[in-house]
Image 1 (tube, rainbow, N blue to C red):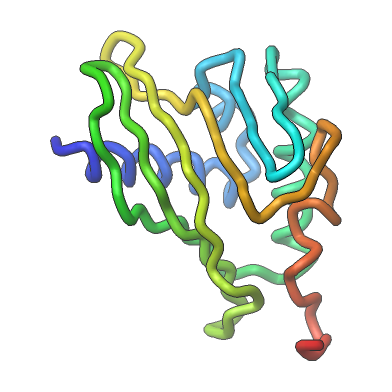
Image 2: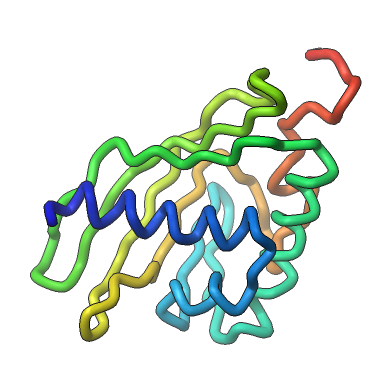
Length: 151
């Protein structure tokens, strides 16, 4: 597989775990400690227990907004070492065929552990978060709620 295919497969696996609210599947896709960077802060998530609250915020936030399609589409991915891939992707949030937020660009790094590719780092330049765990306002502040109109 080429790095873009590996990166997209990893994104798809995480997105599936989120859509299915399957934390055990979700956390197995991460190499802990996991580094998270926002525009204003850097966090080192050392355990599953530290990751769970943000996972739950994402799952509950998607449900509260009636998101029917949570898609993350890889744009670029390259091997930066034999066992590391850095890539960029766009996240799309869609409710019944209508976009509820502009796509946003994020960067992730994957590392190979044995035969598995795991997420080791994320960069979210659209987030201003300064505290972990991330909150609903941090992640979904830009997303329309059902029945609301764009401002």
